[in-house]
Image 1 (cartoon, one colour):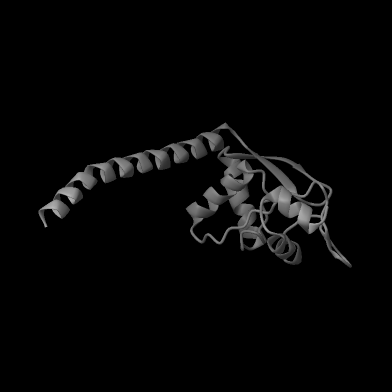
Image 2 (image 1 turned 60 degrees about the horizontal axis):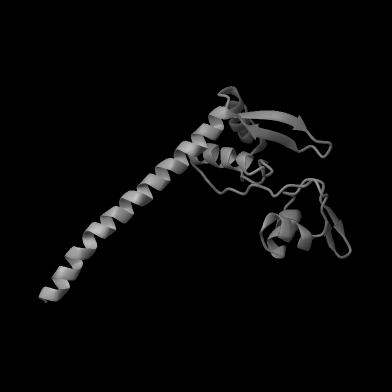
Length: 150
């Protein structure tokens, strides 16, 4: 597929796909006269500029959940450090290494523990939004009363 088809499939712009290809983030991508040739099996790379360990771990688990390509380059990390993160997540049974493709890309899947972790985070975020909305509803009558007095 070309960059335009990949952009449609991955839900991003053509220039973003071109940048991914140029930066070497798309497995099996080859430069052609008219742009880039992207294999049909290629997945959108996970890009993260996170610097703290906890956010890196979270971004890896999220990327695996979205079936994105997880590479050291995409996470702006040295290969050995990325290996350490992936090995740790495998050791604690958050993710599982399924296979290594011919292109060299490694495929992971979230295990039950990793899925439960993501669901718990989503639930906590949703609860915070509900609490914030309830607080806003409680404040609005007070604001209206203050405006009517002035």
